[in-house]
Image 1 (tube, one colour):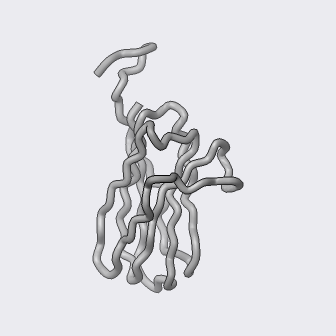
Image 2 (cartoon, rainbow, N blue to C red; image 1 turned 90 degrees about the vertical axis):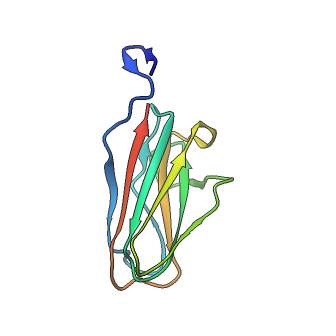
Image 3 (cartoon, helix red, strand yellow; image 1 turned 180 degrees about the vertical axis):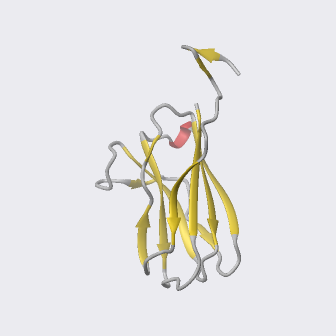
Length: 124
């Protein structure tokens, strides 16, 4: 781990939950945006116990806003199945870096039970 400007390069922050809830219905839900301006990599850890399948995809933006957010090209939407808890780690490297990042959740059928938890951790 290299030291630059007093900060250990490669240091990892404590995980933070950006979504912990049931999905309110069918359609699209976006997580809170994460400020990735000081990060080299950002990992989203997704745990779903929803009773319906969903799709998740990373998005980025140049401002801390849902206005003009863009799904990150070359990162395909990832299907997450239903009924069983599934763990998925979605990593964003400097190739796909945006100042603000988040996860978009799409439910084709409204889940009636279960929770979705999305946690992030950044590597500086």
